[in-house]
Amino acid sequence: MSLKIDQAILHAVIRSEDGQLQCKLRPQPLSHSNALDDLVGELHRLYTAKAGKGYGHFGAPLGDDGEPMGDTNDAFREALIAWRAGEKGFVEFSAEAGQLLGQELGKYDFATGGYLLMAAYNHVASDYLFVALLSPKPSVSVSDEMEVQGSEHLDLSNLQLAARIDLTEWQADPTSKKYLTFVKGRAGRKVADFFLDFMGCVEGVNAKAQNQQLMKAVEDFVADTELDKGERQQARDAVFDYCKSQVAVGEPIQLKDVSDELADQGLDAFYQFTSNGAYDLEETFPADQSTLRALKKFSGTGGGVSVSFDAQHLGERVQWDPVRDTLTIHGVPPNLLDQLKRRLAGEKDD
Image 1 (tube, rainbow, N blue to C red):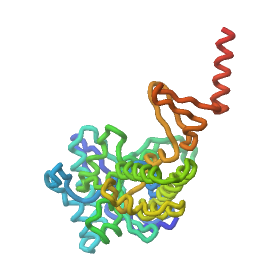
Image 2 (spheres, rainbow, N blue to C red):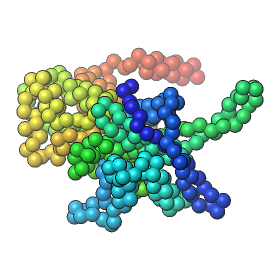
Image 3 (cartoon, helix red, strand yellow):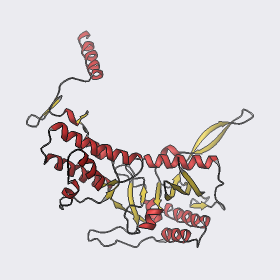
Image 4 (spheres, rainbow, N blue to C red):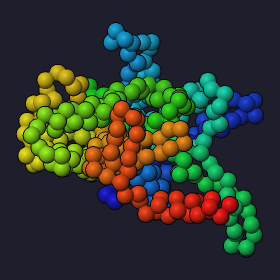
């Protein structure tokens, strides 16, 4: 992995004897070592592969009228600017960030603290600042004297409170709405909100909505052609494969690249098609593979029934009757068929 660490540091957010959260600051950066390389490298890998990330920027939330709501918390951004300008050292900058996080956590009853990791590194010609609150996890180890002893390790498998700033993109285009990414909580959970608040960040690009618009545009575009069913599905597959490859390398979708992929399938002018005002698509936006998977598969769950099949089978192996609200499957999958036969045989024995 071509990842070069500039500086990294850990601060502990702990609960004091009076019950208040406070940040215990480390006075110097972490020493460069194989362990540090492994830690940051693994966090980079886990974070890049994390599905459903949010995309945002420094600023205040906007109201329905497009105007900022409330005051912007500029403390983190200003400290970041000072560090990038060489007016503050990395340790001083990270200490201010730790104090800000401690203050923000103190507003919530659920806060338990953890270890604030901040790492500045370069990967594929881009500079990043990774910020994460890592939870300690108790474990048992064996000493050199074969004594069993308790210890703690960082729980990297449960990476929920993390954000990454693309410093290169931020510097090149301060008006961008997606130079900061963050882990989004599961549906209905807002636990991660405080993590954005302490950095003064807001969501800027709704990746899921953009991918839904792209899927709608592709469906409308291929439906307006003279291609047969198989050729239309090949066009959908080409778009999905491109978007999947962008996810794999951590790069966004480029609308013109999607147009080129469709042109390779004999479908020209997709870019112009999306520019007619009917689709609110950005020139570039993050890929959301789970949303775009509908280009290749139909799936759904409800009432104790789960169904999933490749889109190419609709109208052939899978027949849908919208009037009767039924699906007919021709050629039951062998593993399912085996389960059905065994259940039927068991009921006959009874």
